[in-house]
Amino acid sequence: TQLLEQSPQFLSIQEGENLTVYCNSSSVFSSLQWYRQEPGEGPVLLVTVVTGGEVKKLKRLTFQFGDARKDSSLHITAAQPGDTGLYLCAGVGQGAQKLVFGQGTRLTINP
Amino acid sequence: GAVVSQHPSRVICKSGTSVKIECRSLDFQATTMFWYRQFPKQSLMLMATSNEGSKATYEQGVEKDKFLINHASLTLSTLTVTSAHPEDSSFYICSAFTFTDTQYFGPGTRLTVL
Image (cartoon, rainbow over all chains, first blue to last red; front, side):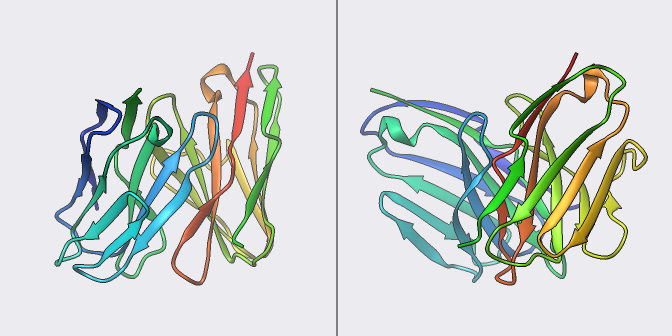
């Protein structure tokens, strides 16, 4: 069974600070996706990373896929209150279509 | 592109009744859709994989006779919660799998069983 360990599960920081969320596994994934979810809504795709070592940037968000495609990180620079939400990483196993989800990181940015 | 809709967004029903939730891919065809359940402050839990034209594949521990899935077309999958009970109250979310190996999620359906 493939598992994704996401950490931290809860994070509360002040506006302007930087933060990093991690997703780790002992399994190799063909791709990994990061989602953001607001209360009462479905997850919204932020990025998909496919290639080992790949780095993608989305404004103040930087996503990295590990060289071995077993882990990923999300780094937010100068966090803003609008970044508050639940961040989910999810991996697609090799030869599969099902997503394996991490536990989620509930991020709160305080003004 | 890649928009997925769900209907209804909220439903309240009495214990013992059945509720149908629709999931539609609006601007693409999806041979595979997924149904998830999410409890408060938790991550998504995969319930089943819905394949167009064939039987759904259920995850371990999910009762196939209670959660009926029908994927009758390339743009529509339905989940019917039969004989619903209060413990079935949850947030149900569907997703559609695209040719780019990406899943796009619907907005979710909040089910409350009284």
